[in-house]
Length: 184
Image (tube, rainbow, N blue to C red; front, side, top):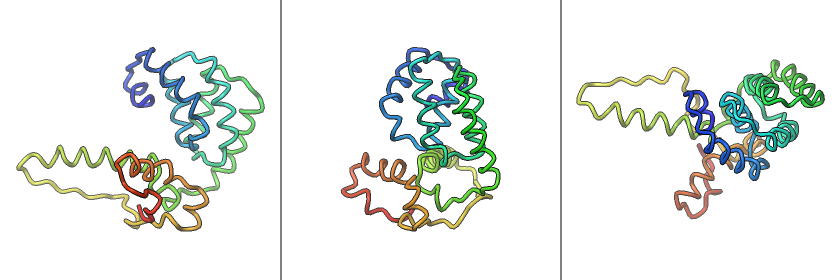
């Protein structure tokens, strides 16, 4: 939400401050992608959060191995824009960028995570809207992967991104045992 508002140039400061306050309480639950998003949103929204910035920097260092190359670049810019001048933090981010440049995206690790759930939610709403018209519609997914991903695989179990994504959605939807979901 914070990133969407910031990129749309909608900057309700009171809402951003509430998001920042809530984020400071829940930072241990954030994965690398979520941290990159909130840090970039706070910077893009030009929201001054002196209390949250050092906590974000600490969380970034703790979860540095979870960031994508883009997330690291965005985070480095955002921490600088937020006035986080810790040389140690920037060094950790820079070193992670160098390591990350040698790594490839692996959807079997990302499947069912927060960004994956968000992407599918937006796609669903968009397709529901587009199919209201009686006009024919062709949809081609040019980046489709395997279609079904094993959330019990060793890679998924190691990174556990699905726990904060599809499992939380399932829990909030009233599913009796979200952890029984083994495919995304």
